[in-house]
Length: 625
Image 1 (cartoon, rainbow, N blue to C red):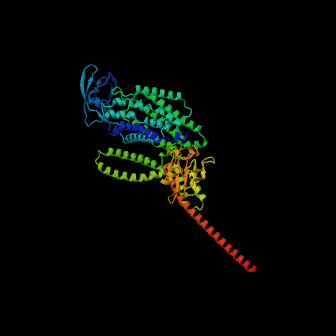
Image 2: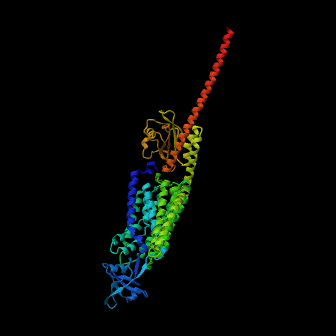
Image 3: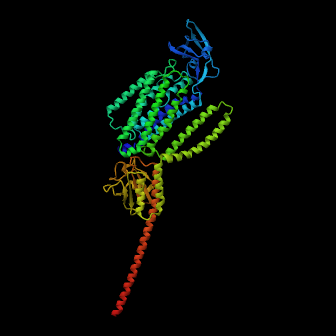
């Protein structure tokens, strides 16, 4: 892969990131009603029936002591619902019901007569226990966090891999549950939109295959155009099938149809198996060094895909059962999805992304950015739990006191969590990077005691290249204030590459004027001809300034895997150059002092020798006289 392909232009990143963020925002807005899931109840009429004749429901069984039996209904009676009446929406499905609600329905008896009965339904909570509510909120939070991180990756590294990852995450949003909430809270609004939300999101599951096929470099090796066209055609057929079989039809059925649900589950499990096979194939085709970096990431992501397969089986079994009123039976599947999405997948993918740098996201992921993202995600999670606890205790007499204690506890937790997150991120995700920076800080601290220009050159070139795994580094010294800068030490440069920098070049004049490090990824015209190519191409210029005069310039390339130095590394290299400038000035002063002393000593020796010669001449003259 060429360097330019690995480093998309800023406007490309901005465009892709904006589109991805807009899609995520739209999805979040659609899902906002699910935040009321902890308050939603279902109107349980206490009977079993089958939909016939449009919106008529024939009673096949009556629950003893339930609302239907109390109203005098018997098996064989037919309830006639009118979807234009609000009461019918309440009695037919999920809705937030006030206490003591009572509705009226027309009943057609077996003898053909019709009567109007009053029904006071029992209130059945959709999420009856704390465990059910916590599982649902954690599941929804995991979908938001994963999708948000995927949007960030699309911005940092737009391409088939990151776009497939983001859209595949969108398939994990629980659209079926959203339909129940929305029907409950907005009886006659938005069913047309929801009718296609589930099949559209579920149809994105096949995108796990192109993601796995392009991980980790974003290139699908061996993919011909006809294969891509075939894949698109199959996806469109899959979308059409889901839209025609899994759309919501109010009153006609409450669960999803069993056959299409089972087909969806089988196809999804097959897709995850193909994704695992693709990941293993990429691992086997990699060289030994890449395999060493990828093995734990591949193992973790394969485990995550296997767990997602188990979750799909649970979902298919649950929605094809057509029996339960509440979602308690679905709670184990919710926790499995949340565990996989919040722990297994981020740990494995983050290992590859942050620690081993096998995915090129340029300088976008610095430790500062990661700290901010991880801290924000954890704090959002804690805040959601705080809100959830508040909703559960708001109707109790101790609500005010408990809220106050919860607020104090939340403040203490947030204060402690901030420090703990920083320490954990530094030690776990950036362990090697942290060790490399510590080594460079030690080199920087030792520079004031350098006694030769060679030791300074090693500190500026060899140490960064070795510790930060840079593909190239070259030091250009200036012998005189106006003279050229000659290359005195380098790594990743050969004798055929440029041996000097023109003092009149824009790069030299710019760093001399600004005294700051300059990124060269979008300014390749600044470089002289004859520089290395590929990952060794200079991506960063760091000046060495002594008493406001440019004494040297250090050119650094990308990392050996093609990624750019991140902002923390740039600052570290700049600090190293500042320390080297001070040390170089001291070495030059010491060198000049030694040269002066040597010159003075030589002059003194010459004077003594001249005095001795003069004395000898005078003695010789007296002897001759």
